[in-house]
Length: 100
Image (cartoon, rainbow, N blue to C red):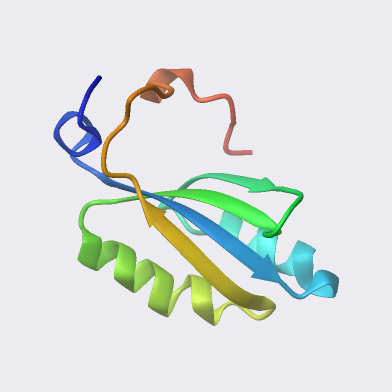
């Protein structure tokens, strides 16, 4: 077990996004341009897109959310969850996604 904050020195946040269905491609393209998003998935269920944000502080995450993500045309709502502690997770060099 390890503390995410101590080991990574980053604030990690799961960002769940609901989008206007006809603007999904537009939203994902806009999100792809945000360097603080480590990963992005189109998912089924309550939300349409799940992202993992990595920022240097909670203030930086607030700015990312308020001034970048929520201003993207087609984003209807966002629910975020700050990771407090990681009991098990991928290490930085084991990410299963790529930035294409």
